[in-house]
Picture 1 (tube, rainbow, N blue to C red):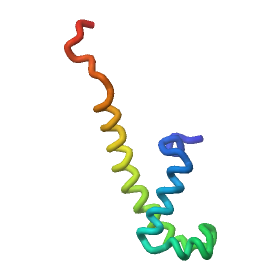
Picture 2: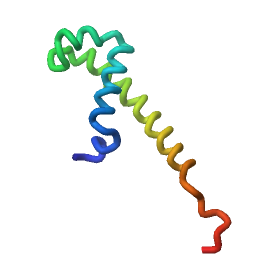
Picture 3: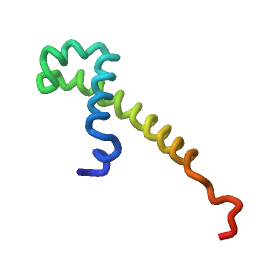
Picture 4: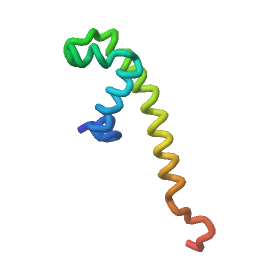
Length: 77
């Protein structure tokens, strides 16, 4: 598994793809045709949206994790 695939669980990544497809109005076509028979132009719209949003989501998660970690300020180490 490469680094990119480890960032989000596959189930979460798939859920995100379906949410973006729904937002772009492609969910009905995907339900009828399946992912494999969708034109690459339409699927590219999903990938572009996911790519931009996924980075924002990962940054928010990283910031939240940093905020939740106890700091070592003020300690005499």
